[in-house]
Length: 196
Ligand code: GTP
Ligand code: MG
Image 1: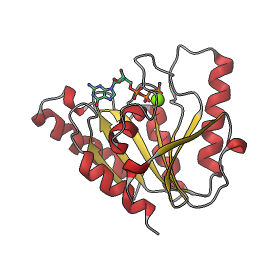
Image 2: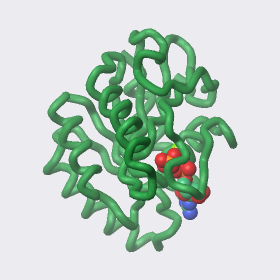
Image 3: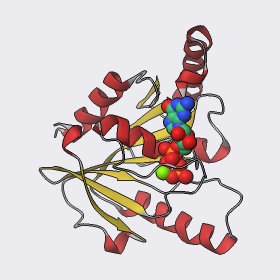
């Protein structure tokens, strides 16, 4: 499995427009602006595969990236961003919930949280939900470059302890798209999910 092979397949407004629900998918979820699209670009070693933005709410569709052998990476719309018209929010949060609930090929969930603001209510809800579904989770604490290494390690330990109360099969790692902290271990965990 080589994530660098990823190519853009399509953007879907809802799950009916996704590719056939077979093979293996790993999805990236998290609050708006958490760094989902940036992490995808870093993991696939491509500058602009997924669109990133300073403006939260950039990714509003379900974006599908093919890595071959019927395996896909999925960039999900961010949640929890207040400054979005209510109707729009409802619509895309619905497609997010639908994807997570119904997609059979979903085999692993990467939950991205800014290391400076981890485990907001919706993050905890998502992690608990994944546990109830028996879906393994990799929690990536993003923008780890923003903390000095001592503070960073302390934060990882703290969040890991909290996460283990919510999910029995969760891994928690620091990650940075800026200086590639945690890239190798994140890549390893995700690639393991892609192997039957
Ligand atoms: P939505 O699509 O809006 O949900 O956001 P997203 O989660 O895809 O976030 P995105 O990757 O677009 O990044 C949001 C902002 O955070 C951008 O300004 C990025 O440059 C910045 N950012 C992302 N990752 C990192 C990181 O590792 N370090 C630092 N310092 N900034 C980052
Ligand atoms: Mg995005």
